[in-house]
Image (cartoon, rainbow, N blue to C red; front, top):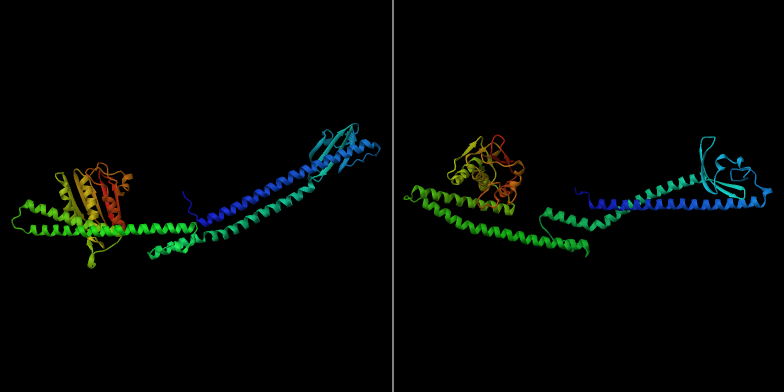
Length: 427
């Protein structure tokens, strides 16, 4: 899942984490180096001291230092038993010693041992005194890390505001253009940098998109105008021919089919023109569209598709339903839904049911899979077993028309028997 955090927040967070991490790494390195150097210096100093003490005892055995285990002491092989028990078997070198005093407190000290020519010398250095200084240094370093982390956060906020100011201004202008519905050149307001290049690219894209939209609108207007003229001629000529008294019933039925096809083409042109303009329009002169009447007309226009199939198409009206939309828009939507039901149903019944807030087209065809119900409204997708030369655009057009007018169109399989149910809910 992609992060939805703002770019400025991510920039500030990255800067703060970088500053905090760098400070913590520097503090860890400083403490580690200090402890290593201090340990080496103490070890070297203790070795020098115990060697010097051993040399003094060997050079002046009559002036051997008195027994004092706090700082330094020397014994011979015969008197080593007088030394503390934990010291007696230590080899030459520097050893870390841990003891618990009578007061119950632990004590840490370093003990340098030198064995030479029967003389065993000890030099003791109390490390406990330095541990308090180490803790104080550790607390100071931790405080410094958090302080530098806070400074990095503040600096990151200030820098992010400065760095992202042109990007913020670009986004603000784009929001204003979206509100006003009119695009203006962006590159004039920005410097010749990366943001300026982005603004210039947006200007070029907006110009190309505007030109494309204008060409599409002009094309749609020209096509609709040019097609309406021959369709009007067909409709008027058909109407005149139907008035002839010498027509046979067969010719009269064929003229009615031509008239219905002409009317459907006119309605489809009007609906497509609305879609191309993304324009929602209601019936003229304030009237409303009767859903049942439009459904009845569409059913009659689709009856020739039944041919000789053992199929019946019925209209069931359970209540009066009127909508504030052109009859042509509803007719295009119902023509696709009812036409698909008739095409896919080989035998049985197609029922068009009008309720208080919806219209449903129920068939007894092969049905659909639940997982394919939504996919059928995509462009180029056709149902299983579809024949003919259709392009799979009918249901996609229905979905776009319904979205334009705020209607909810859907398809689902029947649960009682084979078949599918297509419905439009008018909101």
